[in-house]
Image (cartoon, rainbow, N blue to C red):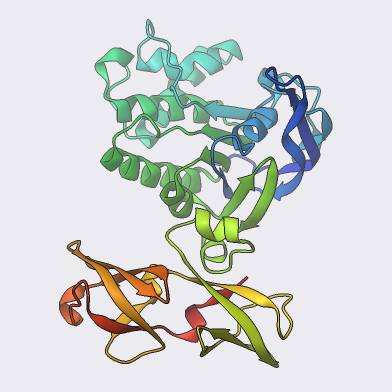
Length: 358
């Protein structure tokens, strides 16, 4: 199946709810605009209550925006009911029909659309092959594992050939190892089918591994939208930097700016980087430093005292004290590094290209 790709555009969307405890209105989604390109895999990511699920449900038609317009391709779809939209949803609970076998679950949407029986059989069997359930069409859903049930839900959504496929935390009920396997399968199937996908999760690793673009949401607003690498290495705010992965923040003050290079004073040490925006000499700044970007050494940039040293197999995890501030360090392949123990004096070593200044 190669479906004609459709994009999704949200034009100043807002959704207002009433807080029944206070009686006041609050915006679950507040003036959100975004443009999802056809054929791309985009993930809405953020903490609970940030507005990501409400945004997805408005695209699906289960909620109606109080302001703004939603477009699927060039079509405005605010007034369309969910079954009239060219979308399909994969739910967190799978929402399979327990008294139907696998074939009938996958065929359900086609039967509602009154597709001819011969075509239904061909499309369902082809889809089961695509999701790795070939030969299991006669099984009842209670005879399937969680991963297999998830594949049935995916096949049921794909078989109707929607323009956009929506995912509402579809892997949250699976164990950790199966989640990794299934997210790989979802990405491969999405790419082979060529469908536009909008995915909601609170799991950062899922978002990083699946997405062409990640949309970080916070308190009903878009905090940042970008590729996984952009979000991780060039966060636009302390919230985004802190939400994605492990992070250290160093406090500094801009001492000089020379062309594209900024000099910042951190604990009396001059640190340079070319990754900054909207800063001037004398202004305070926060420096984003990822734990895997730091090494410990007998010489380096910033003096420190080791407070924790833990062997984790593939890496040595340290916590060190830098002038009263705790810094986390992840040194991979620890056999190739000198081992430091709690109480040892050392230095932080890092390259300026691995710094990002907010």
